[in-house]
Image 1: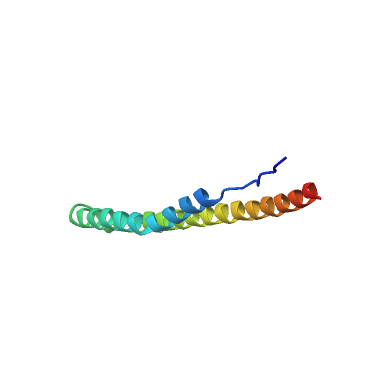
Image 2 (image 1 turned 60 degrees about the vertical axis):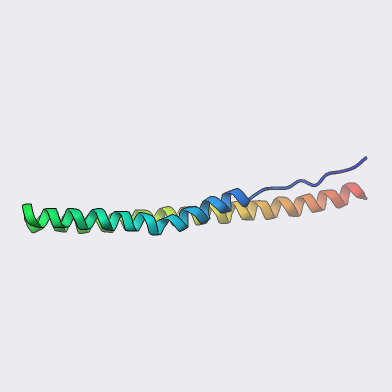
Length: 99
């Protein structure tokens, strides 16, 4: 009788985390473009209060983006730890079964 090896695949989770982190520059670029256009329009049409609001929204955007990236990194790390634990137990079970 042949025993297979169990594999806990964490590569896809790591890839998602990597892509999410890589896209952050694009998100920031898009937001900065939108913010700059809104600021220019607001400066022409409205008082400086709107500009202050845009600064606040920009700070909120950056905080939420950082939180999202941190959450993805945390999830990736947790999945990798679970994968390592699963591999360790798999090795132990394989040795026990093999005698």
